Length: 563
Image (cartoon, helix red, strand yellow):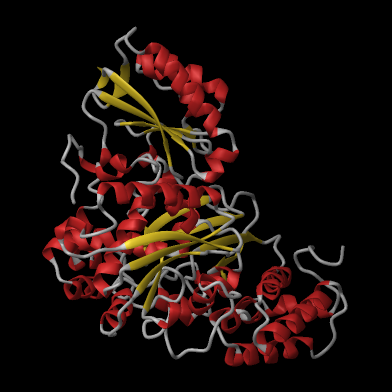
């Protein structure tokens, strides 16, 4: 049943007489000591209670507010500037905060309503940006799936409810039939954010149309790409959004059991998801007869062992069943015969994070965001040779140039841009001539890359593209499950050829062998890991072939190899 309504505020904003100091407690900020900052802030704010009338900076100058709360939040995404402290309702963001800065925050900002400028983000030209939405890193984003991350307490169901949380689930279960739900998602053209971009509503339709006494839905949070942490940040920072999306998928497909598959290397995500599930049961959002709809749905977290291949649907299912995480040929597809041979729907957690917004606002609203063939937004983990690294969310169709130079602040040295690796080990490396390509599923495939899970590694001219290809092949070869010969042995042979080239031992014909092996592995491998494994090599051969040829002559144009 629906909990009794309380004094909730739009978008989780504080009450008129309340200020919230949100300390980032994502994995990155926690590793930098943010919880020590949190503890110190709590202690000093509690000492102020009842002793002073707290004044805080507002749009209209100095305003009096009676109540200050200190809470944790999920990841803000601006990882390069953490630990982060956000002060609402003003939207002030303090960066690179240390325990020693707590005194300034309390004495200047809380007591006097003055800005601690030394803690504000400062651009390279010295301009100070007090508010989060004014910082260039955030200004170019459209944070929808990540909209709550950094602004609500991920361990509080009340904090999520205050944003309108679970109202979309209530709408789906009390005002819509299962068919109307999956039809709405299909009409919105929500495409899977885990890599391939398959229409989510179509997946749901396939499972809905299957006749079975038991069906399952699974949230896939097994991202394993080097440098990728999109799914991790969402499950850590807004776990109830994932629960609401998965429960909606269960209702739409007729599944009564859901699993959230999270790799064991994400202990904070596992902890917060488990707490969120317990709280959702207690609040009546999971369990028997939800919202009096007659629909019952159960959910639990399953931890994976950290195998990259388990991001593939059939390997994930094998892992859930207690078997080795190895893929199976398709068909049959999971929608027809999946977990325990029952109809099963698997969606990436970011995909599910879009569902409550689509149900609440409608397909047409979603179609207005992004571009025609790839509506909505996409999260990316941007790393490498850029000024601002971290987690971003941008409209589909934004160009690589806009992301690298506007959102990420451009190259972080005097060197020139050389390439960007997009889509992780399964993606491709693109040169500067493709900087103006829109980031959407179809445009990237046309140039030999893919959205993938959302990794973006930016490289300057000091990067060797043969060495980059070797790095990703080394990862792929290590993560191959070994089930099929093309992937198991083919990637090993490719890696050996790349090691020869980067060691100055390349021979005539090695490049041709790389191309031959690449094409064979793409065609003959069982699953997506093997089928996309050669992409880093093929894309670098396509756009940086001269570097491969230089290595045959014991030359590394970037000066990286042959040390």
